[in-house]
Length: 489
Image 1 (cartoon, rainbow, N blue to C red):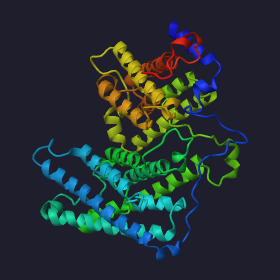
Image 2: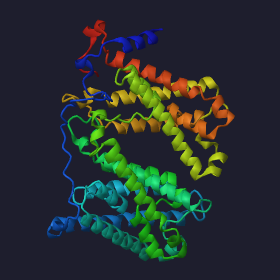
Image 3: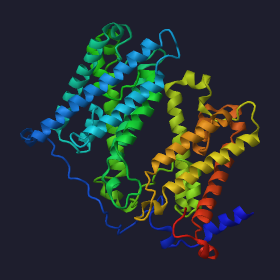
């Protein structure tokens, strides 16, 4: 009853500007006279950029792209070959798919960090193409970068072959091909979606708003870009070996030079370029609404700030960070997005999807529904409490002793909760994640247990909102005024 009363009070009190600040997770849509933005979009790059040929900085950037792509291909292809050598006699030998994914994602993180200030750290013709479409680079620079990237990839793979020629030729040379059991259409779809995720991350991580005073999620761009590469590799290595980078696919195809890689090679250019095109359009004309004047009255002074979870949205609604209308619309969008996402997975790998449970959440054998419900409540509490803490206005205050990169602790919270609860429920803590898989897989067991994956997360979100707002922040509770510290412990 105490929790229910607190929740009602939380919804009923008037928002206090000093207490809440103006840096909540979301600001409402501004219909007219939006506040002046305190960031500046850089001017578009020249279309042709012929004048860049006179600049040493241009050639320095091209050289940086060449060397970065060379190093990228050397380390990653050597990792692939080394894994195959070690796993020949021992299926558990070598770094495994996880290690290969880390090699690709980790090298992108390192190399983007090293070259971002020189060339922008593209290291990928698809990224260069997407940035050209967004007028971030000129046509001349884009062409020179792509040539340098492809030459760097060839040289990097050539070094690997020179070091381990016998193993290189015997174990496929790290070349991308469509895996047995998958069609070319499936492979093309995997490449398009994977590259979309990567290029969208590049746009988001390097957006000028990230460096603005009103941005509550400052970001070290190479980190999310590297993580995007890592996650895409985990998903698509079994399908194509993961291209999402035409230079990465082109280098091994040239050096290995067998029929199968060349036969499938078009997929690893068409897919990434289509994905990059889609990401550029989505970010520039949907999220940023660039040059679309008719959308001006509907643009928010801030984007939705990445809820991606009805339980998170509920918690933020209870804390008056979003309106009821926005919360409902977000939840509907999240559930529809989950259905579509799982539907794409089923379309790409229908037989495997049906054979292995469709990723649906259910209570594991040996656990009661009460245990599963408790796991979902506590897991969601950890997540939503982390969201509140990581996005607290005090984090960005001048006197805050714990500055935070908000997505990092939130992501780690999700990671740690999954380690603890996958054996119990497969880990829900996100009703949309559970709902999408249940709808597409559509078998009795997931639906029989499905209520757990709504009730648990919503109760956990309610508890986290009450705890953070009424215990840690003591929001709007005047009676606690004399006990509140100017700074928590």
